[in-house]
Amino acid sequence: MRTRKSFYAKELQKQYGKMTFGRFLIAWRESEGMTQAQFAKRLDLSAANLCDLEQGRRIPSPVRAKKIAKRLGLPEKGLIALALQDALHDEGLLYAVILEEEAA
Image 1: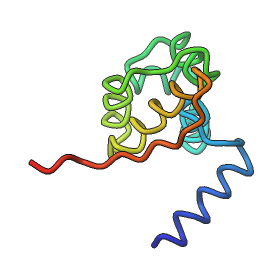
Image 2 (image 1 turned 180 degrees about the horizontal axis):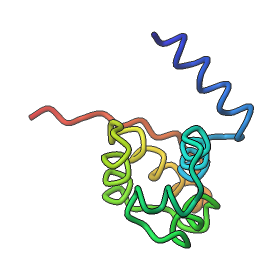
Image 3 (image 1 turned 45 degrees about the vertical axis):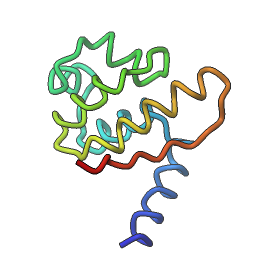
């Protein structure tokens, strides 16, 4: 399964460049054949807010990333990691973020 994920990630990177939160949203929206207005409604965001997220002008908080993941039916960990990574990169800190759940 790791190989398939790796292949898919490489294909996404070819088409959209280095994956960011915004590029992920664009890829998801385009794969669903949705306009920004339609996708914004699905995510319970304004179209302007979605546009800012897609273009990287705004970086979502981890809580907002979690809400977006939930609306898309995705595991929250991946979108939270992308949001945190974008925030770090925005500050000039070039780190990769890998999240692990805390043991209860």
